[in-house]
Image (cartoon, rainbow, N blue to C red; front, side):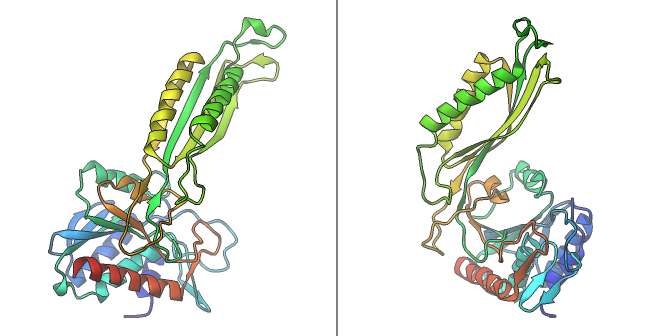
Length: 343
């Protein structure tokens, strides 16, 4: 087979916002059917497997982020410069998908004692739509799952959780010359944030887990919008806060505090996203290195999860690329895992 042929073919598909979702799914299915795998489900996402019950799974998302001006090469053409391979999705994560497929092609499937299952999802970059669709079917994932996000060939065995909330504050509009006639939604929001931050510093931030690069649960007030004019008491205010969580207990404590504050400050709290952290013990590595970013691994429960992909990590960057050496090493890493788990 032509060098890097699968990766080259995958890069050609414009899967920004899943534009050519059907085309890339058809391509992946055809390549793996030729290898002897069977299709378990095909729609916007694809599930394929070998003929034995799966102990090992691979998962990759086919969509990419949008690209912006400034690329030195065609984003939809795999371009080699020295030992670097350029193209939209080379790192995130068509490189991971291609390496999975190459590892399967290089494996003698007739020698497997345990089966392999492959998942190819969509809409990871915006809403995690593909993995949500699979989870809703009560899919029984294999005992060990590999996620091909870019890690520069390092095995990552965990990820922080996420608690993301939107809060709406209600006030009474009045002229600023007589503010006592009104009720400031902005001031309520400020007081709310102050109390929540005090609670966070005293009860949440003090806990630590050195397996994470930022070893504590973080709090960030990302958005705040309120009022309609400088000379009016604001009748409404909206804020968005996210916590990156190191332990499940923190989610419980924060939600309890939010309920208390919502009653005190006349506001409505909406939980937009709640994802539990995970940290696995994995026999392939003694290191307990974790991801600073959320992946589909956070949505797959009851499996040991590894995040492992090519590098350097240039996801979402102009001139996204990986190195030839990293790609070849990744194929070897996936192949070794197949041998250890399935043979």
